[in-house]
Image (tube, rainbow, N blue to C red; front, side):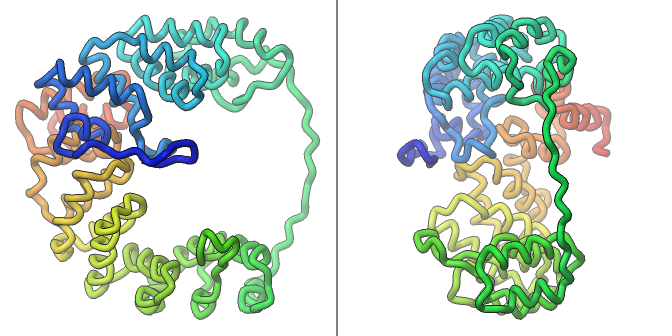
Length: 412
């Protein structure tokens, strides 16, 4: 795991309890239920630090909250993190406590309500409560919240609870400038892109305009030269918005993409692979499989989900990808990509995914749980878990409804 403020963190081996919990795997949940003492130690270890590979994308909050509830762990550590000086620890603690309150923890609810009254990052906490809690749980905090604003504008005025309290907050007038947007035609935009003397900002502006228009196949011959190497430390990469413009071309870009994937320029090869993953044919499988293997060998955890989604389109024809997809599913710390591996494996080998689907009913990622709800093999254990999910106040309405339909004998 890496971020701007910390050194790389090594994950425990995936065949250990700690390694499974760090990755948010459902197998970790099931292990905890069998060995509660070891589970409590490992869960507390995870609570003390960031275990997400990408804190913007990877889910852990509800997963950890439900483990805390399952093991009846005290919330003292989370309370300390909420009140501490580390903002990242605070953010993590508030999300877990908010989920814990939904499971019935009165203590967690009161810890967060107290923080709104006196804590440093109280507006972030209030935003979380407005997003996740029923209105009666935060409605009576209006007076103290408005008082803490002291005439300032809320940090999150367009979300709850401020939407419900907007009459209590003085409305501020904002000056609005109306700018007449220029809309040059495609010919002019393509001329800018073809002009070797155009700056990166000019090319980016042209691509931004094209990105929202119908497909423009005339751009295809220009694509190999639409890159920038400034700043040099980032290496050569596409001019901003080029990927969006090429994506809109769909199958029209496949022929050129078959040439791009053989390029010795990594950025262009990646762009070609993205096109083939979304729109290629069975004959395009070899470069996709080779790229998946390359990413595995390089320990590259970001972006393989796009390849997995593309390979899923080919169904059993992509059976050669199954071993490496399973390794990614088992070992990736980037949990938000795991649903793609799960779906791809199920598409490539229908009927051969019983264990993975059953485990995924406890996965930290909602997409994994939802897919498992719809496709896990029938049996008493499935029905028990479906009933849990259907009644869980932490789960989304969509997932609860899917669990209810499966229990009722349908999946639609």
